[in-house]
Amino acid sequence: MASLGYDDTDFIPGQPYRVHDSTRPQPPVVTPGEDPGAPPSDGIMLFDGSDLSEWESVKTPGEDAGWKLENGYMEAVKGSGDIRTLKQWGDCQLHVEWSAPEKVEGDSQGRGNSGVFLHSSEGYPGYEIQVLDCYDNPTYADGTAGAIYGQFPPLVNACRKPGEWQSYDIIFEAPTWDEGWLVVPAAVTVIQNGVLLHHRQEAMGPTGHKNVATYSTPDPDVGGLRLQDHGDAVRFRNIWVRSLAGYDAG
Image (cartoon, rainbow, N blue to C red; front, side):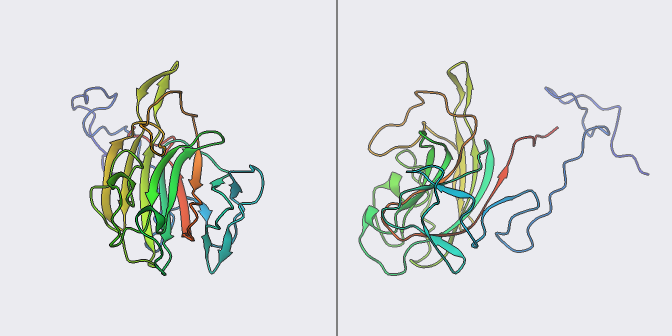
């Protein structure tokens, strides 16, 4: 068998391996999904359109999600409250598809409003990527679709028309704490419909409404995905996650 590398090159600074090191571990094999948007072999399906068994009510943890389920999607039900996954993780890659109501009602924040909250757990809000019908619908910039809510507007508005399915692909890096002190803030990369909105943007802290975000207390080590009931019939489908724990460049 041909040599897989070299054993006589210089060491890479800060690494235990040489340049083109023959002993450097190979990356694990992950099989991509067969179709665009399909989960890869190490993806964890959170919603495949068949049931809501992976979700619970945020208002009453442990109880059923209470959202509408039909035709392969779930739909926020006004008054039912937010829902959250039972599973939790730290650093992750997340895929979510959503659709604002085809019938346009309201404007600004009152039109197709919801949210994708990362790293959320009981009593902890997490980090919201805004969901909003922003097709020909101006609103405040840090509350547009794809914004890190209340902190950073997206680089561009990449919204499709109301009623059309849209996708978020998100890389979330959880903050690092050391004995109560923040070492590295959370970072978020967001792609909407194939268009980059944020590139490893450092969050200012957990997101909120009408307040400046701060890191006041340490984040939990892991959190789940939370979807918001904002009173609008926003739909979601094909939701999966890849935990990035254990992957490195070794």
